[in-house]
Length: 264
Length: 264
Image (cartoon, rainbow over all chains, first blue to last red; front, side, top):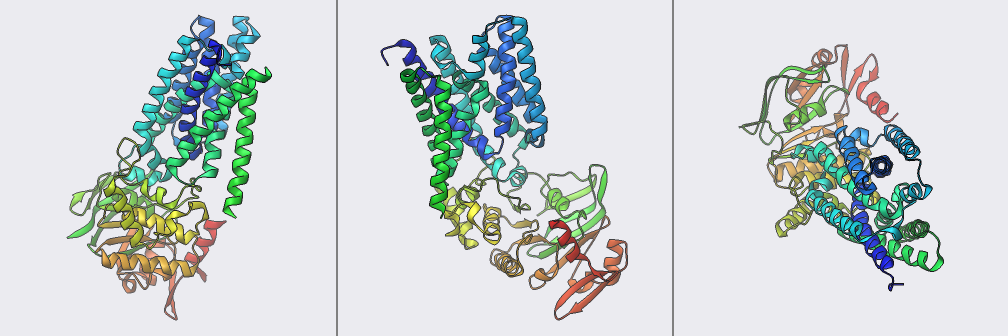
């Protein structure tokens, strides 16, 4: 299957995105902000459909609106970023606008389906390079903020007392999440970013109690799910996103069982 | 030298005056219990000493310098909440505070590791720290929080309700531990609590907050009907019984009732 260019590109794209999603997802789960990540993906849908409408690449529309959305959520304060109702409303409104843009575009169900459920096999070389570039920026930014981010996550009051700006950290982190979400949406679609952002990280946190090993394991699991998903899709001709989400669910379930047993 | 000095300090929270023109001197190496009804400003006072809340008027100085954020001479133990990171080891949790305000990856150097070892050793939590936070009892978790507060060898410890939701036996252990550390390390300690009795064996002086006022002195000076009646703004009776002190209002014990209210 690696004889085909599009398959090699698909594996490369899935790998890049999985590494980013695993690492960023670990902190997202640790901070209990997974719903915010989910909402950012929906905001991204509006951006992508809007971009198609004005004739720009949907990826850049995704990136622009998710980053704006992330920064906005961070600025509105840590309390709002965790408030389910506010996020839920933003999420629904975004999807609604996305639908409206699609309506004006009078377009193709395939375009919408690709945005909602991903299309890793349709990634071309320029997109692959863009994914790589965005991924490097995303991981570099995460690396720079990771120490104060961890401190602010585990002990916000103490971090504040030591001079960490909780708001700045929150804004920067949600921008990093926004980039990761935009990447992730290319592979599994905006509706399913949970599967690469949250499932591997949550499974990793069930399996190890060490921080460093947890991040590494989240990355390994995400890459394993993404690659196995692409391969299974090739052999079965079923959608890649279906396989990735199924594997995500299975890994998480297995990790929960293993975690529960080791605690006994 | 005074460890903490307040001159005509007024603290306001959201337009409400919490402390009104308070003057206060706390000497070095004093163990001061901070008491008072809910909302009397125990946490607010600590946040002001940490430089997180600027006084509406007056000046606060800490160890001879004006109160400012990020003062490494202050160790702070915030009120503990349900830990988010229940699956992380105690050691990683404590270590997150080492240089947590600096950008970069959360990697500990030799000095950082030695600092964590020392702090864990001081509170007798070296063995505990290998276990995930979620598996520790309330008292064990308080030890780790205390270790975190002791990182970087502070001279002043601000402990916000370390006894909350601990049973009387564990409460006694925590108070004894803090008293012992305070003597060994020549620390100034501000220890806020709901109930006076667990602190009685350790206290040098008591700081009682209420109705915007503050009164500081020995237990015999402060825990009296007239002083507390002024702070609460109602008739308070103090009853001594078998080495314990009960603060009563209209025949009900005040602190006990508030405690119950907290958990409702």
